[in-house]
Image (cartoon, rainbow, N blue to C red; front, side, top):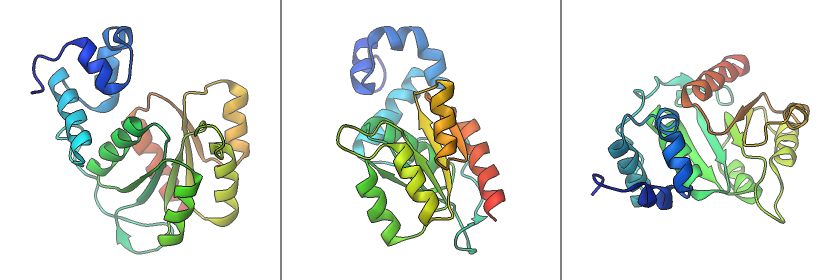
Length: 195
């Protein structure tokens, strides 16, 4: 099923324009850890089917001491992203790298997740939809109540936006599309500091 898809079909599945797929195909593959068009389509099919293993990317990370709990086991990550496909890709890719990951659409979901279990690192999108708390507000709130790492993941790249994110309590500010190798390095850096 994955073979033979046209750029139009891929664009529809990824929620992107055909021109974006054509002009950024190699970069999209690299960022998502896919080595070919077939890998990318299979990844989207697995996400749509609710699977968590991508079959691409690096091997799962070894179990680490968690900074908040002090026990061994995978780091607990929360991904707060309102775009469902992007959230699913991030959860799938980070899970494949050995993290315990929960994807959430907004601050309400974040509050429910924090009430259930502690978190080691929260990845926050800034723009989370109308009438919802933005990532800046969530970062400031998390900083007051949690000892977790905070990474802003956003398309807003202006200097003032990055400064605002860091001022609100973020440990790091990464631009979309996310490079998963860079993201993993940032997660490890933050977890070392928190330990």
